[in-house]
Image 1 (cartoon, one colour):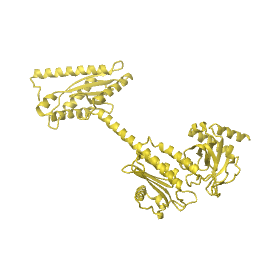
Image 2 (cartoon, helix red, strand yellow; image 1 turned 180 degrees about the horizontal axis):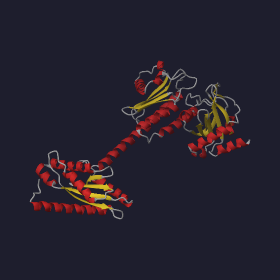
Image 3 (tube, one colour; image 1 turned 90 degrees about the horizontal axis):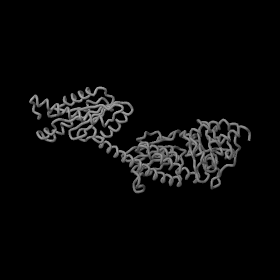
Amino acid sequence: MDGSSASAGALAASVGADDVLLLRPGPDGRWRHEAGLGAGARAGGGDAGADGGEDHLVARALRSGAVVRVLSVEPAVVAAGHRAATAALVACGDDAVVVLASAARSERLLASSDEALRDTARHLVMALAEHPAPPGPPELREDGAPVSTGAVDGPVVDELRALHAVQELTGALRRPPAEAVERVAHVLLDALGCRLAAVWLDGGPAAVVRSARPPAGHDARSPFEQADDAAVLAAAQAAGGGAPLRPEDGAVAALVLPLGGADHPAGPTGGVLAVRAGTGAQPFSPLRRRIATQLVHTAGTVLAVVLARQKVEQQLSDTRLQLGRDALTDVGSRHRWDSELAAAQGLVDAGVPVAVALLDLDDLKRVNDAHGHAAGDELLRTCGAALRACLRDSSDVVARVGGDEFAVLVPRVGDVDALVARLRAGVEAARTADGLPLRVSVGAARAEPGRTVAEAVAAADAAMYEDKRRRRAQRARSGERSGR
């Protein structure tokens, strides 16, 4: 082994690869094995089967631009006839694909980051360009006919692809429903070797995805592929009901499978469409149909979990909203007020002063007795709306903390007396729909660094009751009746 080969071998070993293959496109657009290291130097040597055609791992790396990883209990074909138990396929632009492989399970290769694998692949492209691989014997099918050595048509590799597809489907579990549906469509597009795939949920999101480009040497996109998403979904749903997809539209090899229903009771209702389009399309083999059925069953289960999680999250959100909102006045609840006080202490400890104001709506009992509880409720709603109008921004908080008591929390207030005047003026300028005026007793205090918010609340409460006594005494001296 010369110096450059030794250097390339050390580079591959640094990411846990024993074998390396360098694949490049030939004049006819088909990808070929050009060079390699280890067992990769003796791989098939010919066509890598990665012309963008049916579901090749190399084609997947080219389409997605992502690092395609392979893990198998037994070595399986990954590219150009090379078998590996662990592999990573890295597309280096449009003119090179590097396969990093190990015949056994390689923990280092599995743990290497995508960025490390891409960086290693770029250096290997330069190092291996000087070492072309010798041709090897062609791989034969069971009937003895030669096949492209990298073609992934065997049942072992089909099952391996199905395993990877299931792993990719589970990646949709923590996504919102629309993103989960789109991911399922992409996984099916790759796993089933399609030019187009669609997934829809009845009454929910839908996604139509298409391969990035038609296979080299085949026809341009068919009319079916060029149709807009709505037309594709309409045709797919009609096909699910028994109407055939028309061959003249280019959908000459298609699967339409249900999501949910009797076959998949765990899944939501909807459907899946997988299309091999164009004159070069081949029918789905019985094995591929079985794999499709298994993947759709898994996809239905995944989407059911996604929808169930969304429902639970919505219920939790509604519960949090209910706990944080007073149903009558539409201001914060006592539960929210307690939470905001705890958070406010953090602001004070960080050096931000916080003002607390407590307000008591005068004469609520007299309004209830004289005009009925509906009028009293309207008085409370009017007070809450007036206080919301006094807030400066989202950092200010107003809550109803008792029957006729409200509280306001305002960070970064310098003049507490000005805050009291602003709140009193805002409330007492308001009127109910029936014209009843509002009067309010107000007390406020400020929590500064070195003082607790709880102390400010106690001081504000004392100031509010002092304000109430002072106002009653003023009305008594002026001879004003306390009723309305």
